[in-house]
Length: 384
Image 1 (tube, rainbow, N blue to C red):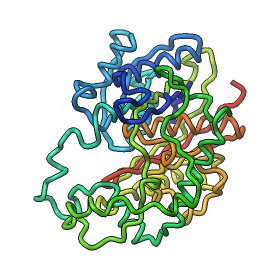
Image 2: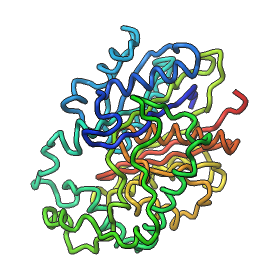
Image 3: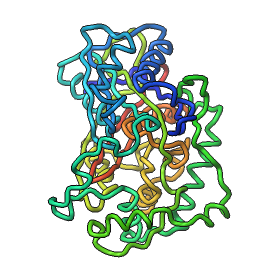
Image 4: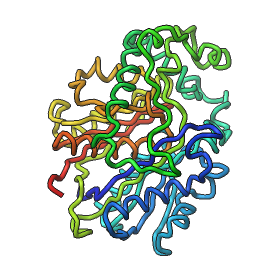
């Protein structure tokens, strides 16, 4: 692809509750903070032909084309086009992929793309879509909450409670260790909040004592589940709900005098079995690696979406990457999952991780509900 990332930033993540550190803001203010953050870091206001914003809950304060509202809030030019997308948990990465495709095709020279989710203002499933309750669909295609899909997948894949406890502890420990290092270099303080609010480092003994959290929810979805499930995920194995935003500035080569941070080598989307959920990210990963001719062993850093502990455990055990290359600064199990923003957040985190490691190739993998997946390979450009 002929598309380059000139910069990528992410806001701090605030708890999704009324007293959360970002809850007093509007979603467009978070996006505007990311726009300003890129301009300040580049010491210039870059040209923006297109603004693409992913958001899952596109109602209420995130309705009315949140990308367009964000364009106004950020003071972007009247000539900047703006549109919103919803690809569930992959939305933020899909937005960057769309920007890369537009730049590569010559339909624009520059785009800011990413996502936002203010779950303190727009709760999960606030759009009340008919899909969530449509019993006329085939059982395989009917909506199943991701937590229940994760429990069923853990049982089917033989992922143990102990493995998931280890994944949760690793995410929290690495998150704590990353503070004050280059792994958070592209994170923006917003609204007086300087660190992500959700991380909570629990000892292994406490993790082991937690009860499975989603058995009661299963009573409402027994028909869709199709069987009794051994519920294994606790609250520590689920990414906390939170507020956050992230953007990447994508453009043609030579867009600015300053060198880009990375080149987008390839991008892929994938669909998967909606009943299995949380599996299409691996398909997207296989596609994007096939496009590049790279193997996992040739990738220097990987950001793999911790969409419930089962997803990252399966990746580590079934694909056998070097664990020291995966989510080196912690993941969503610790820091939270502002749904529409997470893909762009992981991309920003990846660029920081590559900088710290002086690495060349990086991989982002997103997986979500109902068979949604996306993946991107970037090549870092050193000595900016």
